[in-house]
Image (cartoon, rainbow, N blue to C red; front, side):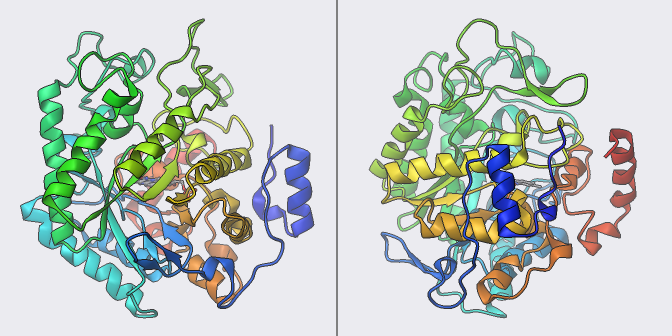
Length: 478
Ligand SMILES: Cc1cc2nc3c(=O)[nH]c(=O)nc-3n(C[C@H](O)[C@H](O)[C@H](O)COP(=O)(O)O)c2cc1C
């Protein structure tokens, strides 16, 4: 199946017709508004009184470019400056930061501890300074994403996972070489991880961040808790037990870091892991006759959605006085197409099993349903970069119609951070800088190199990794 490139859909009617003929349930505004009354320029007031200056958010984007000790490098600073210069008024998490060494997703992930605290102060200041070159920052909200990578921990060697698992997953264990008799993390150790999150949150507050995101997405530890249906004991089985981890962290933060807001980025639905078929097209891993029980927000088929538990999760967030929610899905390690829809797959991925616009529409639909369920919470949506030229039009529509409060941008910010400022100012888009979802930003780290856009960002194009990436692509035939 060949899908049309979004860039070829040049007019609103061409885009609308293509959506209709492809059966993609997505709507958009044909005209963009500019100026003080524009939907995307509206402020968003939080219950604590803080006013976020517009409806764009930057999503967390790590770069695999810290030092082995977890300090940032100039590449990290460059990315954070771009976050600030984008014009978005919510910076959701900046990038995932490990709360301890064994929770790193790669040997170059940032770690927050006493010895890196000054780095986080400097990173945040660099972001704010870049923002203040064009705007004031009283309405700029910046959070830090805290994580433990759990099953996908890879703290020491770039290509050697050192998984910390909550339970044995029948497909993921096989896929990632986890032996059936390898131990699961103990309840005592989980309690220590909780303490590490609380300590990290205290440090984030000292570094000046307004909130911390207790990451519950993408297959990492927080997310794995939500599908931990078979584990005996305090942290598995019932919904109450599976959310104990979050409740304990939040209780610790409320006690030890008063005034620090908490947000949660959650994979609100998940599918079974996908694999490439003989033609490299993605297909679901077989699950047998039984119900697939390991997808939080799944309906048991492995490829369907049931939002009963995600709704209960929102109820829990509200009861914990958590107002900020960022909706994502699945995991980049086993079903990237539902989380970051792309035309060109990463080197460890598969050809799109569906029109990537369907992935965008699914994320928007789920966010809409959850927003309608809990309208008082502040929602940030994800997965819009694949919309390319039509991103602003869809963004305006979803904000104007109350389907989300803010539109979060990930990959687009790597190639074209100023898209946000351009849209808000009514300037024409810079087409050559629009992310075309080549997936080099994922392929590079999968091969042990720093992440970045090696196609459109001249800075990365001139780095030595660009040539090595070309060789990987040639082998892949993309
Ligand atoms: C290179 C790269 C790094 C990412 N790093 C993070 C991260 O640190 N934390 C996180 O929650 N999501 C991370 N994501 C996911 C993005 O935040 C976002 O959800 C995803 O790219 C889909 O949004 P988009 O279509 O705007 O790119 C990353 C994605 C990419 C491509």
